[in-house]
Image (cartoon, rainbow, N blue to C red):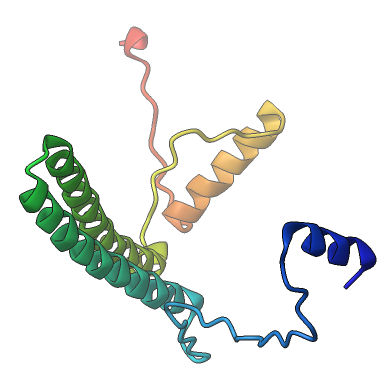
Length: 159
């Protein structure tokens, strides 16, 4: 220790500690993440989120039990109000867990829909009118596949 710390400890009447040994403890995550190298990120994220939601729900239920015991002992309206809010938050977490299921289902269904036709609402052609006409004529020829019929046009005013 430095002289300043020794003097402050002396003034305050504290003993100066000699060679304190500080033990380092490893930090352990509350929910270990299990990563599967073979499955895609979507599955890993889903599993991790699901484990966290389950953990939050379990802790919330423990907290609800504790706050309800306190509310029963104290009979204070504020304790019951807090219990009600906590119940609402746990219910919201359960809803989020159900939404997670739906989102995973939507994400997995998304690649399957790529082969289906999609509606194009706003299409913009960049080019001249001549190029557009040529493209449309070419498209008509491709659709008919060379089977064109010669039809005679009749003028009604001649008759």
